[in-house]
Length: 425
Image 1 (cartoon, rainbow, N blue to C red):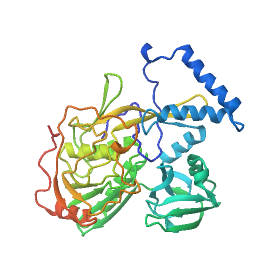
Image 2: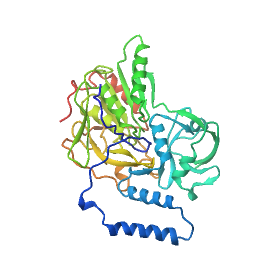
Image 3: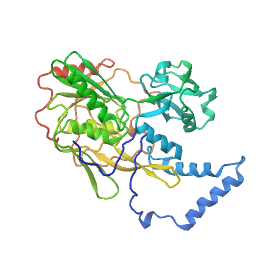
Image 4: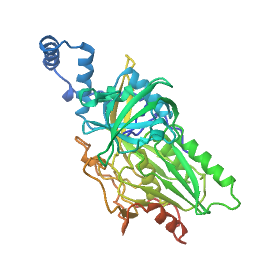
């Protein structure tokens, strides 16, 4: 099992999550603003509040200034007002009241990233990739998109009308009833009699417990032990980092899982301890270009230790860690504080995890930005070289999505995994 992690650090992609972190190091004198610089900000603030054509709200202006400052850093740093900060905690625990869909602001529109199975959006027919164009009859082109997303949450039993544009261009309007969504992050089923399939859609605080519970259940309800498992991380945008580390530990007996490096020279390491959930059982991990952040930590650790075969597409490439700092007014700052590195010292930032067996889709829809990677995002962090070597995989052709079929073939192969669990050099 994983050693005690003193500071909770959560890796984030397009899903909300929350962490408390200690204050950062004192800024150098070189980085400090002069009094005149601070006066310039005050002057601009006063000019806007006094002379803008319409009356302004001081708090809104201040919040916008803070957001602007953080948005200049990288795509993942942001300001969280008090209600957003509280909601982030709920999300990280896998519970909230709303329509049951994970949303993100992309290209000045609200895109459905993930739909929770059995939730209001799923029951209505909303799917990942849909773009929300209107909420309760209000065109989103005239609204603050973050506020629009917040408006989809509300008390259980209340209604909301949502209009979406599907990928094929068709437009549909749905009347949804908000419900309490207990978001499961792990789904499983037996496949081909002798194998287990486990999909992790995103990482919450409960993900490691959910996976272990479902693994145990599947093992105990069989006449013969499983011969191998498929761990599906396709479309997993990340979330809470600690459960991903715990899951990696569940497949390893020893060695480094991931290390993080920030501005200081200190490096924080997370290591595995003896004891596996499924000793020496063959594992195939499915990934795609939307596999990001904490998912890449898990895939990278299992790949570097030779514990699993990684199959699919090169992953998103989000190799940065965000800490959420609690402010005195109840708000928070989500700030990129470090980069993470795989056991072999590889940096994933803007590069991603190269699968051992690459399956290339015949058709990839690029026109709507649905398949961007970290390197495509504005102001993404530059990859800092680690001390490890890049792991290249073999490529096989693919027709649409038959990754699962390929995973089963690989699991059935007699020599699916190399012996031992030593990290790649």
